[in-house]
Amino acid sequence: VVQADGHALPIATGALDAALAGKGALRYLEPARALAELARVLDRGGTLAFHLYPARTWSVRAVAPAPPAELWQPASLAELRATVVAAGFTVVRTAAFRSIRVWPYALPIPGWLAERAPLWSHVAVVARRR
Image (cartoon, rainbow, N blue to C red; front, side, top):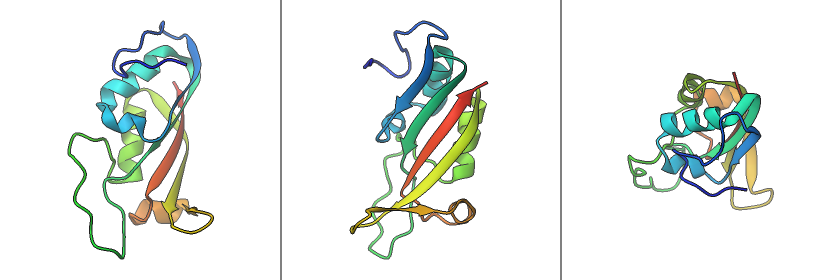
């Protein structure tokens, strides 16, 4: 386990088989730089798994203020995938979820729907370094 600046990890090139960035950790970083740095430390074929929040999500409640511009919160799954691919990864899987206030607390959003409507409030991504 390493805690470090996500733009300059103190890890040798190709030293890791996998990396995990949970709870939206990547949203506080410049996505292109952070993903390029993760690609650098992962060995070819290495796995990256991460979680993000969207820029906006549909709600029946009052609209919340827009998130700060400096946070990486993709507007769509297509935008998210394009950023990941541009950094040297192949997206293996995306899983979109909607938070709810009762059990089971998160509902999976089918891929066809997640692509067309901003219903998701969380997305998990698994990608492999090319």
